[in-house]
Image 1 (cartoon, rainbow, N blue to C red):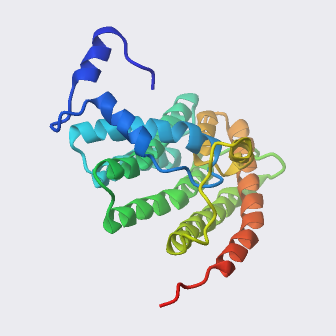
Image 2: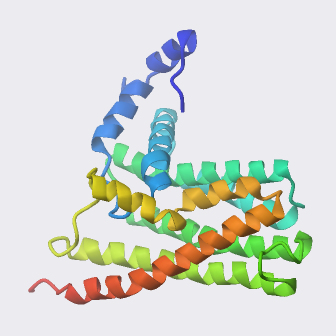
Length: 270
């Protein structure tokens, strides 16, 4: 989001929340209170989406929205994109629309947690709602690609795979994405339960930044951007297939590592 200029900038800076805090003041306060990114967070999620989410969280705070309401807004954008993928014939315009809707859904998904921190902390019910929405989105997105390819797809769009065999790609991506999402949530919960034994959060060192780039195939934000090419079936199929392959390789490599980490956790003495 670019900074406003002239009268618009003045309006934004002076429009205040009922407690007297301006929008820009809320953005600055949230920037200082934001928790560190998770270790290994991919680049778009870490460097772009969190910042967009911060602005949306500040705006939501000024409007008096609750974190659950922001989660609902995220769900609406994501659901609209998923329905479009499954129900509308692909075109350049449709691809751009889908990508924008997915990215807005992702940005509001980041904003709900940041808004909760602005309001003094989230609730277990809010965290539950956020994870449920994310779990539905994680599988539904790839199932929508499956339906869209079945209804509108070119049988030869996937390089090296012809006929209905191409439908195995989104089916496989659904499975891998669901396992990846669940395992991430489970590891997060285990680390919270064993804070003294968990690895430190990601920092800003060169190695942390490089790691964010290396795990790009697992980046949901990058996957959203791939849908810009949805109207060019062969281009989209190639990029989508690369994301699937990269995510699969990452999960296969990460699962043993996460298991070894979980094996080191010990219950605190009663």
